[in-house]
Length: 102
Image (tube, rainbow, N blue to C red; front, side):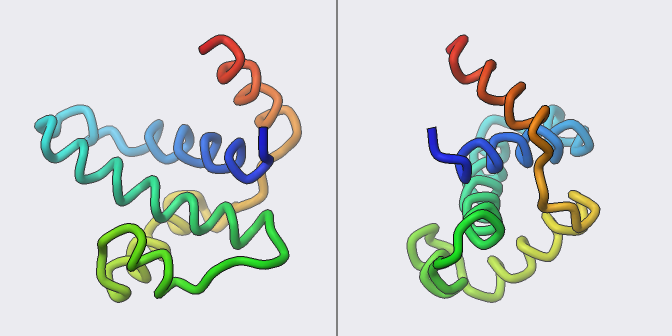
């Protein structure tokens, strides 16, 4: 499995653990949040893990959001992660074990 995907899954786990209001949303709102979290998390994971990555504008077009919204989502996600984009090896291993159990 690609390290970027594991980093993304780990970051999503961290964000959801501190984003307690997510559980109080309706299904439609949860899908909305998940889609935006997925595109933003993918973008951040690629930027951090890969030497070559696409522009924010490209990710915004692929994700169906405006560039302005994606930029603000990127900033919010970084704030929620405490600007800690690095994922430690134990976190990656734990995430990999969860993926293998699926």
